[in-house]
Image 1: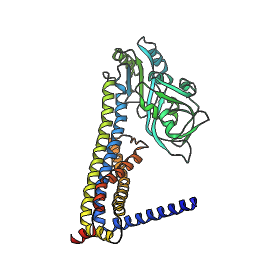
Image 2: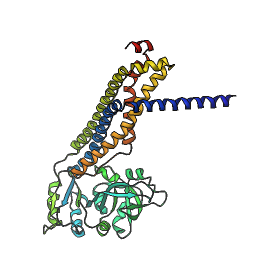
Image 3: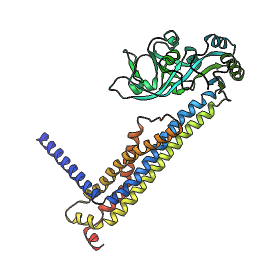
Image 4: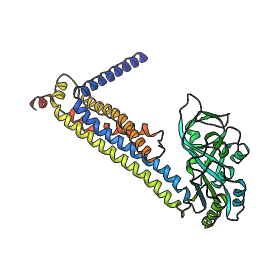
Length: 399
């Protein structure tokens, strides 16, 4: 008896849910202008929140790259001229031999957004492609988490090997307990190991790293070719001047000293403030959307008092009427949140493209924004639902 009773209850619950969804669909489509007004506020709110958070995250990455140069214990030289040839190894060794220098070498961003996937059918991520030497990675304090030590990168320039940042490895599901391959710009590579950087070059954790010699052969000159030296605090200016003269005596590379005063503390404040601004704006817009839904639904309940009273006269319970209003709010909120999320991403993409930035979108942003928009709409529909459930048939007929 118990299984049979359980099946009957499940069947009844399914039938009630289907009837509620059908009533909600008819109610929303019967008055398209009212539905559009309710949806519009949520769409604008979700779109604004999505665009704000995405642009804030993208700006954080851009500022992080800019502030790479603002470390008093790092020297950064950027090549604005001919970057088709590697930095002379003999000159690099001379710079490394200086007493204030701990390590020095190339750490270049070859491409701001190269397509990376673990297989033809796996999802593709667009991440920075970094071309570097072992000494350049040592200067940035990049360390190997697992796999072949990255210090071997110079000894294997002819092999199709890459190292992957730990954040990117998590996104793509790359593990080093089994042989791994990755497609980078439609070329196959063997994943040699996983990397992490704790010295401020955080984008390495979400990037692909290969030997700069291999990158020049496969992809030509890099987009942002840089020489990096890890120096004793206070010696950055003198080392930068010496390195410019040693690495570019003819001026063909047009090396620019990108080593301003220390900005580590300022960087932390700026990036965290940007994130807070994006989140605060998202919460504010969510609150506005919730109020807009409550206002629209309240007016709709007033305008529909006859209809709701007639439903009550036909035998609808107060709970059923309240569920109808809540279902209208929830479904309208879900559709509006999906549309608003898409519009927000499109707006952020256009803005970042105009600024020349590589768009950065957290994989969890879309589901969180859609869930937040739907929840805000449901919360906004609670009071109108209670008001609708309290309308009596007699009051409705008198109105």
